[in-house]
Every structure is written in C-alpha cells, then in structure tokens.
Image (tube, rainbow over all chains, first blue to last red; front, side):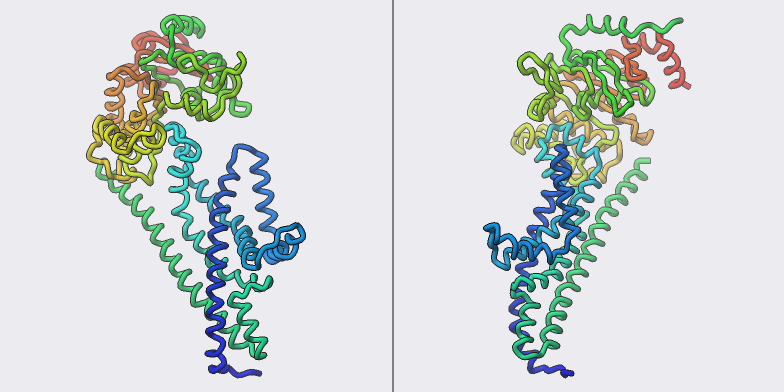
Length: 234
Length: 272
C-alpha cells in the first residue's frame, strides 16, 4: 500500500497541469463543433423535404445508440484505411463533437419547438425569407431559454475528454498515466486529475445554475409586468 | 321562404368587380378528410372593405389564411391583380409556384392576427422596422421614420422603446396593425383582431381599424364577430357557412333583410 507523497505530488503536478490545456482545447473545439453541427441538424430536421428529415433522424439515433469510444476508435483506426488519416487530437475532437451534436440538436429542437407557431406566421406575413426567419425571429427566441442546458453539455463534454487518452491524445488523464507508469505510483497523478476536473466542473455547474435562475427570473419578470399593466388597464 | 341560391349573389358580385384585386376561383381547402372551403368563388376590388362573418368553423379564417400563403389550397386558383398566387404559368399550364414567386406575391398582402404575434424579443419600434429593413431593403433611418409615422397613427408614438410584454393587449394589437401597415400592402387581412382582447380594450383597436378603413386606398378583408363594426366599416358583408359563401351584399341589406335561412338564424343567434 502506498502512502501519499507530497514531494512526488509537487513533482508530477506541473506535468499534469500542462496537459490540462490539451483537455481544455479539446473540450472547446469539440463543443463548438457540437453547437454548430447540432444547430444544423435541428434545422435540417424541420426541413419540408421528408427524406432529408429521415436521414437526419436515422443518423442521430445511430450516433446516440453507439458508445462514443467505439466511434472514436472508428474515426482514428478505421478511417485511415479509406484514406482519411487524422491526428489524434483532430480525430478525438471530431468524434466527440459529432457525438454530442446529436444531443445538442435535441436541445435546440426543444427550444425551437417552444417558439409559438404564430411567430412563424407573423414572419411569413411580413415576407421574411426563410433564412431571415431563422436568424431574426426564431433563433433569438429559441436559444436564450436553452442556454443552461447547452451549458450542462459543456461540462459533460469536459468530463468526457479523458476518453481521448484511448487514442493517444496526451490530455490530463493520459499525462497522469504516463507519469504514473514511469514511477509505478498512480495514487497522486490520478488524484490530481480528479481534483483538477472537480475544481473546474463544480464552479462551472454553479455558474450555470445561477444563469438558469437569472434567465427564469427574467421571463417571470416580464409576466409580472404584463399582469400589472393589465391590472392598471382594468 | 326558401334559401336563396348562392350563385345569384356571386353573379351580382362579379359584375361589380370587373377588375378584381383578389380573385378566388373554385378554391377548395381540406385538412385531411375535413373540407373547410368548398369550391369558393370570391372577389375583392381595389380599396374595397369586405367583412366576413359566419359561425365558427365556417372556414372564414382559412379563407384569408389561404391568401396570406399560410395555408395552401387543395384545389382552385387565387389571383392577385390577375396573377396566380399559389401557381405559376409554365408553357400555358399552371404549376405549383416556388418560394421565389410566393415571396414576390406576398409583398402585396398584410395580415393582423388574433393573437397579435408581435416579436417579443424586439422593441415596438424594432417590430415595425425589421421587415422594411430586411425585406424591402430600406435604410434603418428611413424605416424608422415610416414606422414612427404609423405608430403615431395608432396612437403609440410614446411606446417606441417598450417591449410587447409591457403593453396591454389592445396596445399590442395596435402595434401589430402598425407593423403590417409599414409594409404598405394592397390588401390587409384581419383575422378576428379583437377576439383575444379584454372587452374594455376592443374599442381602441376597432377605432384604429376604422380610421385606416376611412383612408380608403387599401383593400381590407376583415374576419370578425363584431357585427356593428362590420356594418359600419365594410362596403360588403360576406356570410360564410360550411365552407361556402351563403349570402353577400350591402351591409344594410345583409343585416336588415337577410335572405337565406342560415343567415337569418345566424343573425338571430348573434343578437340574442
């Protein structure tokens, strides 16, 4: 049984901490991809061209029903046989981003569905083009309420980046594993990884919670005002 | 007395409107198995104010939604100034129009909805300038001038920076009217504009619509349950039931001397 060594902790901490940048870079890259692709999927799903809708639904279900690790291996180990060789970082963020985009698409969809049909009709009556409707009328109403949910996925993705270690991306977990195997001490490196994740995820989760309350209060405030106005008028 | 046949009234109307602004030709609309509009012929002349009355479910709202391109007719042709709205002529044949054609045609039509449908994330002024800037390509300054003039007309020049949620229902509907007017349509559609309002707010909206009607140039099709108002403002009353026009004519004639049994019983119910 090994006993906690502070000197070893201080020795490996900088190595692991440095790898945190890779974790953060991978998280942000994959997240941006998931956000953008998720929105595209959500919009395509509403297409009037039915075959396209079916393809999007089928693809999303397939991606969600298979483990991200399998997808990751597929992108990294199988695609090269078909002439697509990607660096570990690119393959990892691509797989993670695409996987999460299907979940983000569902969130966007809930936001878009909550915009009343009358908003679409008013936009049509004013002759906005399809693109203008999305950009000016629908998305500005659909997105603010779902920001907290999208934020939660940022944290989820952050916590999922260690799977990139499986395809040799030297992010925090992989750095800790390398450090541990060099000295045959794993307690300190893995503890450091856990603590680093906790220190970043937990405050972020609190921040999102706060944001959620704020957004809720804002929409409630509007209703209060409306009721008051009605009272005055009546 | 027997109900007078619909065709006679349509015949009379056709003479009055030799060059109609809007023409429905044998238009039908079905939702699944339910036929909401049946082989309907209906014209509106430039500048004419037409009020459509009838029991709920008689197809009157669908009638104007077809014109706003919110519903597609199942069969028949709707024309604006002689040009098909939902169709395009290709080699002498009418085919379903593309979005580009609909976009061009739609510019001539404006609509005010029962539920106002203001954009809640935009101020009153922005609600009225977004379309002129993005759709008509006006400069923001020019659009704001036009929007302010229209908002002054509906009595809301002091609410430019308010958000819809801060306004009463009556005020919201007046903004919605200004928003539609800013686009300068040739024909304006009103879909039960006062039905969602508290009774004490109905008057202010009707006053605004009456004022616009008196200005004249723009044709109006009003779907309404406000019989007194319809009688007052409209040049012609159209009574629909079961997806057809049952009777139409001069307001005075329609209300004081209804010919068909269905209109008689409808008016009796409305009065009681």
